[in-house]
Image (tube, rainbow, N blue to C red; front, side, top):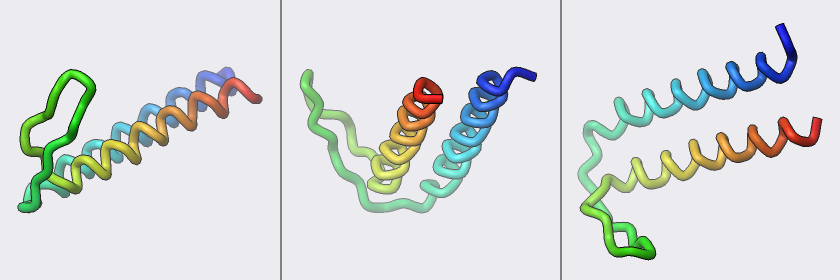
Length: 70
């Protein structure tokens, strides 16, 4: 299997599993915050979801930038 294709599949599966664990983990989260976006504010989101989703998006962007360098 091509090395680039393997890295894409691994990155996709890893980030999907992180997202699944994040969704399971936020079930008991009680602290909620709003996010200020350019077009307005979001609804109340659990703080753990905000932190976890930013980590996962950074992981995805980091894996794409590493693929271009190799």
